[in-house]
Amino acid sequence: MDSSIIPFNKPYLSGNETRYIEEAVQSGKISGDGMFTKRCHQFFEQQLGFKKVLLTTSCTDALEMAALLLDIKPGDEVIMPSYTFVSTPNAFVLRGAHIVFADSTAENPNMDPAQVESLITARTRAIVPVHYAGIACDMDPIMEIANNHKLFVVEDAAQAIDSYYKGRALGTIGHLAAFSFHETKNIISGEGGMLAINDERFAARAEIIREKGTNRSSFFRGEVDKYGWVDQGSSFLPSDIIAAFLWAQLENLRDIQAKRVAIWERYYSALEPLVENGVELPRLPNFATNNGHMFYMVCRSLAERTALIESLKSQNINPVFHYLSLHTSPFYAEKHDGRVLPWADHYTDCLIRLPLYYELSTAQQNRITDAILAFYKQAAL
Ligand SMILES: *Cc1c(COP(=O)(O)O)cnc(C)c1O
Picture (tube, protein in one colour):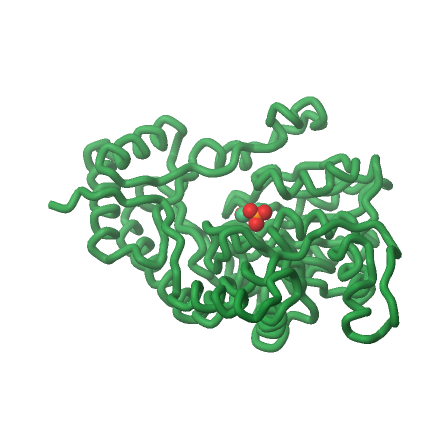
């Protein structure tokens, strides 16, 4: 029997990555906003329906750009889920914001919109929903609350490429949105990200902030005859070598997505019998689509999850747990207002992610699901 190691993730190369990098190198221009960056921008704007996008060096950087664009100041409050990656709050904390953490829903780890309204104060400036596992947050109530209170919405769409809410692409709904092309995401460039600008008021300034506070982008379009320092900013644009890699991935977006969704669906049907026993599988609200980013299960207890991870690891299968609630983190516990967030803690303790990558074979997947089913049989559920 095959007992070779099944990693949690394996970055997929679609085939043209090194060829396009070579082309970028040969073109003689490998700094930012070169030929491949332009191709990537066009793809998102023309094929995926984004109004305006800018590639960045990471999703973390795209979130930092969002915080700069919103002019977040010390003391401003930003509402987001506790069950998220540290970059979501860090971008705003760097500008002096106070983070107000909301709980997840019982249905899935996404932020509970019903809680958001009660967390708004006179200092609230923004709401940052995170589309966990690429599954849409309920955006209509979030946008309505934001509009009623004149707040901005930044979607953390790091995991949400090619996923939809009531037919609208995630990342096109909030005022701004941030995507990741880290090697653990669906579409990758090693490190990489993108800011989507859905509110035109931010478009010109986003280009300036991304280019060290200069109007270099309008200079290259011939809109001004010299460029200079016009605002605050930093260097958020990736080298065209990164964009060349990304372009090879985007050309294969449909194939990559189809493959990942098929793997996800195989997991779901093989593991569905466990639902009767109280193990939870991902639940997709009827307004959401599945982009095959992640397959997770929610165990009934921390002890059960720990035992399951150990059992799988002993068979050379590498699942992983995920976030640790940020409201109880060493950095933020004393800044948090003391509210208990039971669902965030539940996912912290009980959620487990299974290996999911393009090259995961059906035989390997059967090995994983057989091992999980055997674990629960022996645990005599
Ligand atoms: C991956 C991820 C990020 C960070 O992305 P980088 O590109 O690595 O900076 C931020 N938020 C969420 C929800 C993520 O999954």
